[in-house]
Image (cartoon, rainbow, N blue to C red):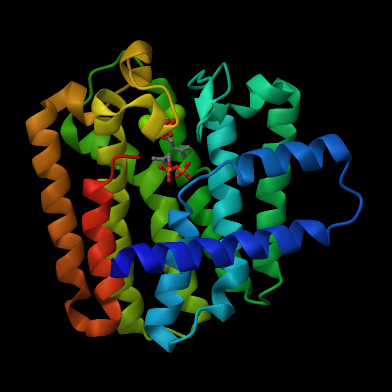
Length: 287
Ligand code: IPE
Ligand code: IPE
Ligand code: MG
Ligand code: MG
Ligand code: MG
């Protein structure tokens, strides 16, 4: 119950801030603006901005300072999904319960909306005046971070990998953004080195667990709840944990990873309870 209220409050704040941001942007062509809003407000879970705001609140008691960062993280995430779904990438037709952006608006508009979201995100990060933050995020989501993971994922279709390589792909393609969402929220709220380091380890663990469960849901999930088409990974011969080690071992790996995440929060008191619950949610979720 505590968690539900926490998730609802943080996602609502993010949505309002994203709407306000887009409303004050001048000069976006109508079709592009429509495409951006179509994807951004299709009904995602807003986990990354929730993590940014939650980290800021844990550290300073207030999440307002992290709103630009939270919006930037959701923009980067949404761009990554739009491009991930493209026909020459994962070639998926359903996202967040709606036709994917390229299906609804065409491939070109999907590329352009993704380009716009990524660029806007860095504009927002720059507005914090923290150049170190911009550099850190660029590193996390760029060619040696999230896109490195996406590249390895793409190049591994039909290839059998070992567990450590697959963990690395998952840590990069999904873990990097989750980790930096938490770090950035904590950073702008003035986290100490000790807090930052604990939250970073937490982010690494839940980031990996998040993708392990994403793999699992692609096998056992149902289309209505998931809002995307199950079986997509198997159809493309993706390297996933269920394919590599089976369902049972995948589940227990995710559980162990989340236990690690919760342990790293030991340096915090009751203010970390939402993050403790959120770690459990990552493995119990059905969407
Ligand atoms: C899906 O992320 C893609 C991954 C990186 C695993 P989410 O499950 O957070 O998707 P939305 O934002 O809720 O749609
Ligand atoms: C997506 O991983 C990771 C990024 C977009 C960076 P997946 O390809 O497994 O995500 P879904 O299952 O399409 O949401
Ligand atoms: Mg993919
Ligand atoms: Mg995909
Ligand atoms: Mg997936």
